[in-house]
Structures are given as C-alpha cells and as structure tokens.
Length: 121
Image 1 (cartoon, rainbow, N blue to C red):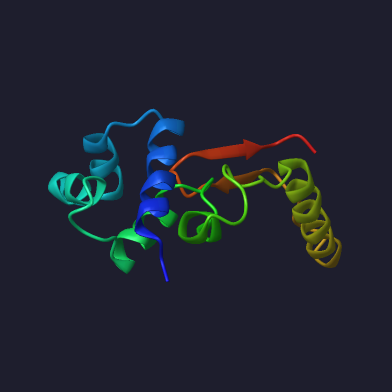
Image 2 (image 1 turned 30 degrees about the vertical axis):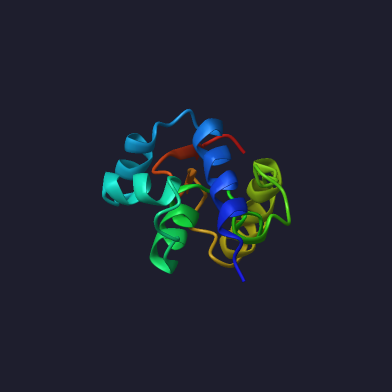
C-alpha cells in the first residue's frame, strides 16, 4: 500500500531538486494546477495516471523510489560512453556486413526532449 505522506515528501524532493514551483510542475506533467495543490495539501491521493506522468517526465526518478522510498534519487545514470561503445560495436557489425555504408553520426534522444549528437568515432 502506498504511504501517501511519504509519497508527498518524495514528490516535494523532486520539485526542490528541479527547482520547480507546483504550478510549473503541473504544467510540465500536463495536469491541472489545482490537482497538484489538492495533492500537496493532502486532500487527494495520487492517481496511477499522475504517477505515470511523473515517471515519464523525469528520467532521474526511480519508480520504486517514488512509490516506496527504495532505490535512489536521482537515479544512477548509465555512462553515455558505455552506451556509445555498445552502439558502436553493434553498428560495426552491420557495417562490416555492408561495406558500402559507413557510420556518420549517432543521435541519442532523451525523454526530456533533449538530444546529443556524436560524430567522432
């Protein structure tokens, strides 16, 4: 069972970590501002839809941490160099099979709408 008081404490931690007001947070996860106010004041409990929106909007939030307080916040990030290396190995296999093509760049898209381009191999 979800402990609403602890959940709200963790939600406030997310707001503070990202330096967001409750209104900015509501806009970011696309819920009504009044729902955040009601939630933070203890009038309402978080819905599954709300929890999913928070999880999708913040890549650094571990769902187990958000719901139960286990795990870490912010979530341990994977090393982009390792991801690039793994992707490069996979692409090398493909390019070895088809010699007429070569790798020009890798573009990684993140859930927060940002991206990173790698063109030096």
